[in-house]
Image (tube, rainbow, N blue to C red; front, top):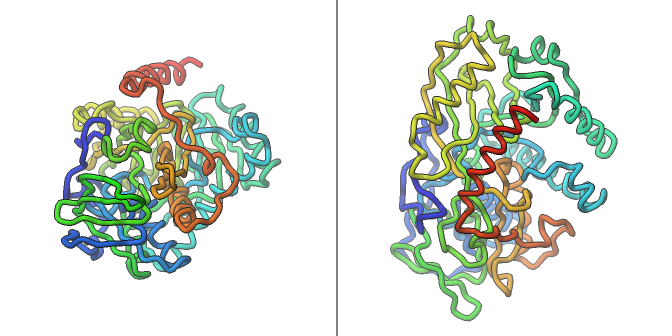
Length: 446
């Protein structure tokens, strides 16, 4: 499997993974095909995922700029088409309480409202006619052990007092009786404004909107070389060269090795693994009291997450392999199935029909950053969503569009500082291995 820490290109025109989304989304919408002729453009965007497509759409609709999007493989071939489809008001991994302590209440509030704007923007774009199999609203953050319940209680107090957020604390019996009889749940904090979608169909909807507004989306057109000529950016694809005045780098966890020095050693791509089970029978659903299609994630350091899909399958996800060379090892999918059965012992004979993995993008300081990658600000990026960027990536696309047009950004750490470099960057995977072992111990004993 393509590994961003080792490979200089994700390929050209590679097919979608054998995922549930690829099998249940119908035919992909039309794009502009392989770029075959050289072009001079105002803005080129590298990557046709949520971030890049949102930037293209907002450049066209708010600034009258018809951007050129270059995608190495297929639209949303990366994490945008492989994720679990959780539309949450969040990004990164930094808790609000930590933001408050580190940056103060005003900044914490600003970050919260940016995340809220991301969720609202996704809703607004869906309302323009995107069919993405949107499910019932609600997100259950499950306490995976009794000692995590006070943490959820403190989070609820902060969210209600500071933001007036609509959250509800649920006891173990509440969860089991009203939502799902998850044996590994000791209670939950329910958020009312999240929901599940088909992430690939959502991305395809964004592409239709962007192209309808005048943007061009060229698939199977990877950037093989990147040079500068004065203030012009020269992007070489297999069959053509693009000369761009501004470039938006929207590759996140799929950024190839040495694509641009401004983002080198600033991210850690981490594999997330997902399985989708065979459809559950009415008897199996009843045995688990699986009444909800709301999205679920636990409080572990090494999180598990799941949701019931429209055809009564269970999507279940968690961490995958450490390296791309080990990504297809069936151990990781089987391990997820075994964990799923710990939550639902009645499903002991259940099998999975689909399994796949994808790279999420970790930041050293646990928050995404939207910043310039060069001295002049001609190249800008947004990266580091830490596995929860479905909503914020769309907000980031709007902010990137504003940034290349010279508009000021909010005075928040997300927008005013670069992604920090990883110390001892060649040893990032060693650190990841150590964190996985620490997280396993923490989740079990602390």
